Length: 126
Ligand SMILES: [Zn+2]
Image (cartoon, rainbow, N blue to C red; front, side):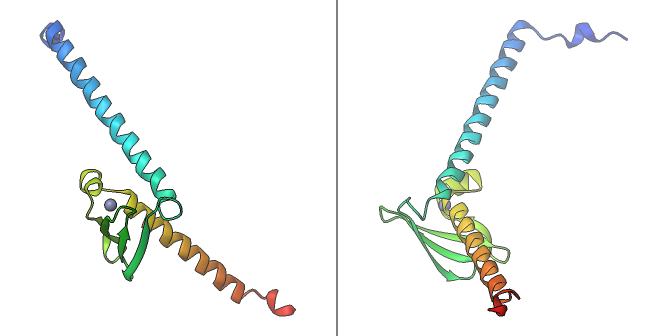
């Protein structure tokens, strides 16, 4: 059975498909760029981004921006992951959430190092 003839697209169909594919690729590239920017901004949000975070429960944080912005961030296994900003509702992540996540892992790492020092058998020799 030869279906090749029936499956051929017209030039107009090909052009439309090509346009739609390019638009989808552009949208995907834009989203990828936005997500990369979010992660990049999160790296230094609390160190030189002018933002600060306050924990009000183990997985709940208030994040304050330099221009009086306030966001409520949930970050943890129990509370889940959420932020009430526009970026989060659009992309499912945001610089506030990612910055809090980084802050929490840094703190956990520091605690682990402290615990390691406290039980370091070599430290007890001197
Ligand atoms: Zn956010």
